[in-house]
Length: 282
Image (cartoon, rainbow, N blue to C red; front, side, top):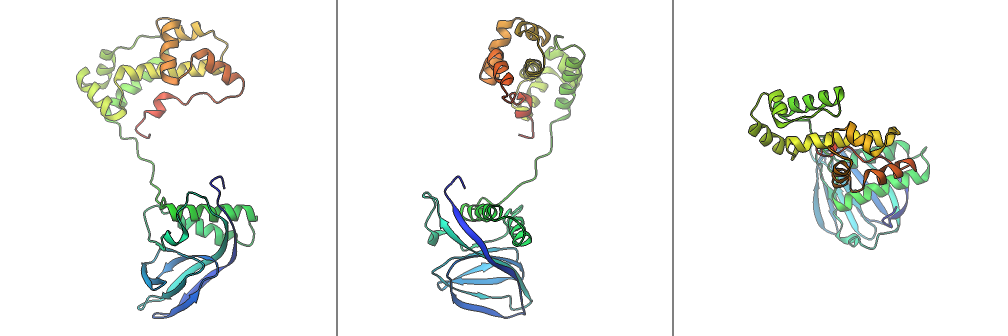
């Protein structure tokens, strides 16, 4: 991995079931082992320090320690495991003795699907792929960055939706057509003052900033997919002059239209639309 982590494995893996009240250990660890507690609530003790590991937890066992598992006393315990060796650790990582012993479940935890992938393909996937998967697991476990979240829904207020829809309809019909704040507020069925407030809360933009960015987004398409001159594109997208267009374009994208067009023609990716960056999904 780019961060300097390198490991070997999995060297041994499987699933195990225990009846209520069973134990395992103490044992002296010689390598690393990830343990996924699929069913049952477990107590994992490492060097005499107990850690709760409820169902869904991931346990990391480290070489050089003495550990012990006390499986659920009231119901069966089911767990999956695999062993691995670490060849090299990143210099900026904490010492292994300071790593967490147990990662208890969190919403959207990425460790479980990664663990499932290792178990599913341990005998069939190529070694580099498995190594990278385990490396990602270990990095995620040590850093604690395990949670994922669903993408937020577009929750723009109705006036914003109506105004933006009017903006896009107008630009589709005539990209150079003038669009005023009064036009947008009339389409949104609210006062101009109220529209400015809801735009700011929803998009962190004023309505007229949104209009300008929509025009600039259209200009990027023309720069990358037409032979129109910069002046023609400025006029077609509703800017007062080529100078005004170039200045606003550079403010938005960091480069002039000419510079962006040159890069696109040499294979570079066009800039991301500004309105996409400022949408409620950001």
